[in-house]
Image 1: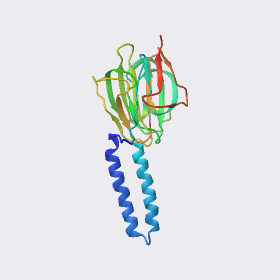
Image 2: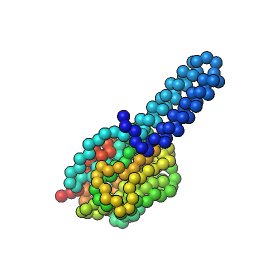
Image 3: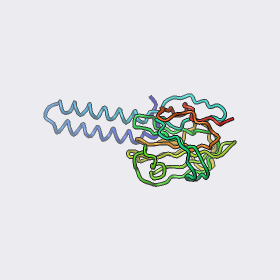
Length: 219
């Protein structure tokens, strides 16, 4: 199993702390049973941390006019919104909630040029809540495809997530399936699409980042 680069330092620190806990238990306890219990508990925690930063192999293919899901998770919002951050007029917002069990790599949903790439400080309310889109710490990425209006992707922190990583900058040319970034420990991604796209997912549907077809440009 490959490990994503976003997890290198976190895994190192976590393993160090867990090993220290085991050593303390070993020298402080009478008998080996408490130490074995500690080893089991810390081992499970270490496996969880390593699994969280897994980097799956995915073959990403995108047809013309398709928008791919930028994240693994569950579709929690499909609604029409108006005059949101850095885009005027009406858009269709599709929001994907990522639990701690999902892969947390984020993918570019459409090929184009990065027009805006901003990090905005904010709160850390539950990422499932609609208000998290505007209140929580987040990044806003505006992508201009070769044809059509801009598409906005928002990486949103949640209660647990305290670190949003973004690997692109303004002026970059990107392709569908390129890495947008990574969010550590539970979060949400919003995609704001022009009205001339047909949504291909439903509320409650599970998505696979880079694989699930989120929307298709209407003919």
